[in-house]
Image (cartoon, rainbow, N blue to C red):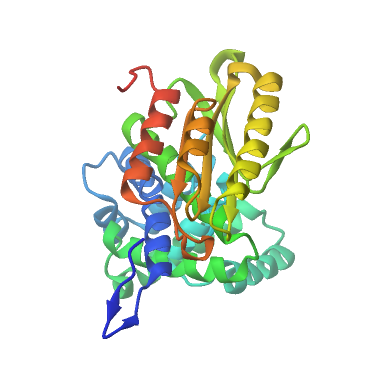
Length: 326
């Protein structure tokens, strides 16, 4: 990512770029809520018009429908480092972000008090509370259009990221993977040949090898699942003999994983290092699906550039959709 320099001073706002990219991956969730809202109300209006005009009971019906949606091919919602919320929490956070700040810190304690005093369950407490908030404060909020909600989500994700202790590079690579998966969802309104996706929220182990970022796609009708594995290699040193050693380690890991997993895995290695040997990069490329090499120090890596993201998007489309791209 290019530095923004004014009067010899770097004023780059990398965090905004990262969080904006992650917030954009919430749009399929927004569009899914809009589709269900139209279905519940038998309306052609957009989500903003529906939420601004319908009764509180209708808002409650929309929320219940979203929470209880049975189909597996639902969109995903993510925290500030690209980890997936389970569906119930995704609904709670998404609607709470739209109408109330700090759902976990401020709203959740009120819901807990409500449950203790009246005995209502989680779902009833959340839906009744959120529908009341929408009905009471929509005239104050004034808009539920996507550009407005996007800005709110950026702010909420920033708070989420601050509260999470994790690996920054891992978070950036996971964000790129999330973006590619959501790109497929936007095209297909699902995950193509697969029923569902499970994105690992931390490193996984395959044999003796650690994979930093990964996702598993669940097959329909008890077929074979497939996985995408994204090992990350970072080095502060400038290549040379070091790149040969690190490449050799990566190649050995790839060989062991392929022997164990067969053709059920796709591997996309991410290398963030200055002056890594080009011959070593080509050697790795011969053994896996794709290598993303970012020729920079790891402390300057703030996520995939446009070309790299496009390549990852295409890899996921070819993995998941019937129509293969060239």
